[in-house]
Amino acid sequence: MRPVLSYGSYLGGTEQPGRQWIYTLRASAMLEDFFGAIRLKRGLERGRLSLDEAGGDVVGRCATADADDMNAALELAAGAARTWSAAPLERRMRVVEEFHDLVRAHHDTLVDLMIAEGHPRALARWEAAGMLANTGAATRSFLAGQMRYTAQDGPRTLQVRRVADGVVCLNPPQNATVANALLGIWALAAGNALVVRAPRSAPLGVMYALRELIAPALERAGAPAAALSVLCSEARGTLDQWLASPVVDDIMYFGSSEQGIAFGAECVARGKKPVLELSGNDICVVWHDADLDLAADALAEAFYGSGQICMVPNCAVVHPRVADELLARLRKRAAAIRPGPPEAPDALLSPVLRPDRFYDVLGQATEAGAELVCGGRRLDVHGRPDDTRGLFLEPTVLRVNGLKTARDLDAVRHETFFPLLPVVVPEDTGDAELLVAVADFVNTNEYGLRNSLWSGSERTVDTFLRLIRNGGLLKVNDSHIGFLPLLPTHGGTGLTGGPGGEANYPILRTSHLQGVSVARGVRPGAAVFAQAGSDDADVQEVSA
Image 1 (cartoon, rainbow, N blue to C red):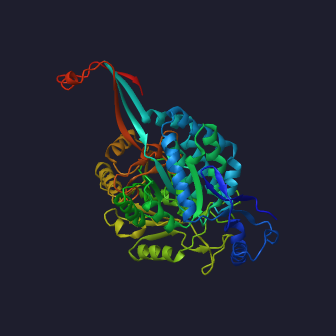
Image 2: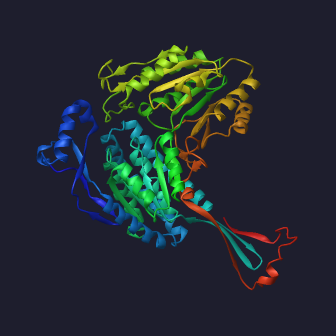
Image 3: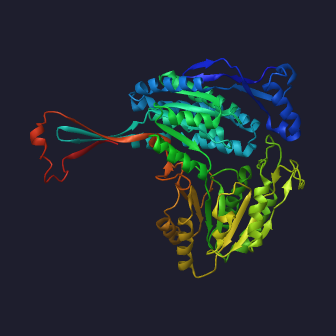
């Protein structure tokens, strides 16, 4: 049987024939018979088995690339960047519009591919929703306005514009390869050329998305084909090659904070701009006047993908007057979340490959006095307890009493990447004083991706919005993980985005500001002192 999909390396519009291949098997086959699936995968990749012997569990294959392939892609990108950056903004933004329409048209196939690579159905649908929200008409209009501002000052036309950096390389994370690789569409809209590494652990979805969604969008907008390359290559060698290449301008890196901050420093030392998407440790605050049912629903989002997503709630701070009620609701919701094969309609949990670390964090917390509200067990794919071989972890909730000492616990201080939600219950010191203390707790978080608040009081909401500085996104009385038009999907402060980190609009992060003046009939000698005493009264906006 032939694989459903087969992709060679894609170098600037041309597919290169494969010499060695990475095969993708359905994740459900791995769950049903892990060792049998591994034997099949290795047999195919080492040439001991033919595709006719593989059966129906092979989804597709991707060719592996070497350093020569990557060098060729970078050279093509450098040439394309020179012409594509000069294209009108309207044409470059059309690439995003075409891509948006293609995502809608390919939605079901895209979701099915992510499921095949191991994403639970609900998680895959959420990721696809993010792609659409991130590229919708309202977002496109807002970001086009950020790229260019023009005004008239007498004989001068003044413009502040953003100009493409050049060649952008993107290294998506292993846990959400497709959704994060597709952020590269905005680097292309800025006028950059894009080179993407498809991770060897999960290359097929990335190859499909860039070949079937981004490449056609570029063609429809009249962009040079060489502006896009995607190759399946080894991680460390590729990153070193990007760092050493004189043609690479920006590197979009996704990963842990410890490794990412160090990599960002290496980028700067090599003259590259790092665009870092690192760990998150999001905080959700629930005040005493919140709708507790809705707040509990939002907190249960912590268990999407077994918490192995950077933008889920990682810690809750709950007003002491409603803590018991909220925990009862949260316990009920956590108990209803079960594992299953990723194709299952209600599947939400993903396998966790390092349960030993989970138990280290959980044990530290309970030994320090935290209360285990629910969860804590290993489960098999059918939801049955299995303490030795279970690949899933039961959704786990901890109650942590006291705000001042909460960050002594790793479960609170750091991103854990498990289905583990610590609920911090502070001392009741009175609403005014407590709100300030909670806001300080949020602001002193070392990470800064998303934060959220649940409250029915406009005064509380207004105060919270005034006080909170941490994070790239702040949401009030809303889904913590839901995507919205205009607002960024990624980016943040502290250990989330590194030095200079902020909400990440890739079209802005992979471009730079430039001021322009086009004058007619101006005498240079007179112009030197012409602005002395000027109050800018004659400057008129032309466009935004």
